[in-house]
Amino acid sequence: MILFVKLLLAHLLGDFIWQPNSWVADKEIKKYKSIYLYVHLLLHGVLTVILVGEISFIPYAILIAITHGIIDIIKLNFQKKKTKRTWFVADQITHILILIAVVLLYENKGLVSFWQHNEFWILVTGILLVTKPTSILIKTIISIWSPESRNSHQDNSLASAGNYIGILERLLVVCFILTAHFEAIGFLLAAKSIFRFGDLKEAKDRKLTEYVMIGTLISFGIAIIVGLAIQAILLQLP
Image 1 (cartoon, rainbow, N blue to C red):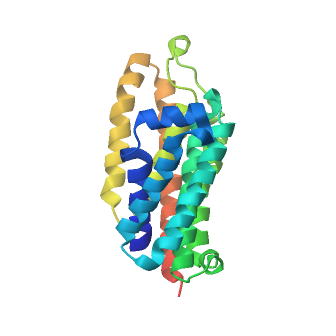
Image 2 (cartoon, one colour):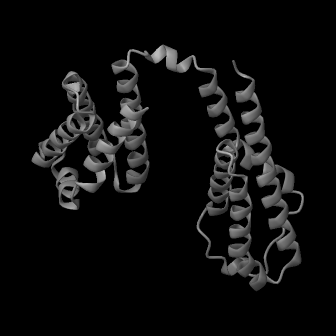
């Protein structure tokens, strides 16, 4: 675990802290011809070796730097102005997956054994359950009401913001349960209620208030049930 933490720290330092915006701009213009791309990869390799502190890890550091370069070149060549955010997320996820693979290979655990862990599948299934599937379920349940705010024509909220907020809050609830911080769930619910209070007060729409409350309570309820179910199943594992 500590090896992955060190590799992640090296990645954060190399990709964010010590990569100036001028490097990023130059890479986006010149792509693989940019000298800063290779300086960036060298920095990643050096940071990895220094933080891990083991001579035997040098070949793996080189592997990380090379794969990092391949991923960056693919992103630089295919990303467009409208798809920058998507490519950034995909780029970072791929880098993290590479780091996980390197850790498993270096510690002789193997990639196959990683996928065979029951805990992994239980956590992944539970986490995915509280994302889009739960959003669709909640939308289906409360669709019989669907009130419209009197100020709906002046609604300046971000597109799909409510959906993403719901997903994030459910992920946090599951995380709080699995780490035994139940008090944080109350804090999260209170914080959301405070932020929502102003909007609902301005709307002066009782139906909208009830609609939001039902959706919120269903969202938190499902997240709590899933979190407790994951915890119970993990405790039953040998």
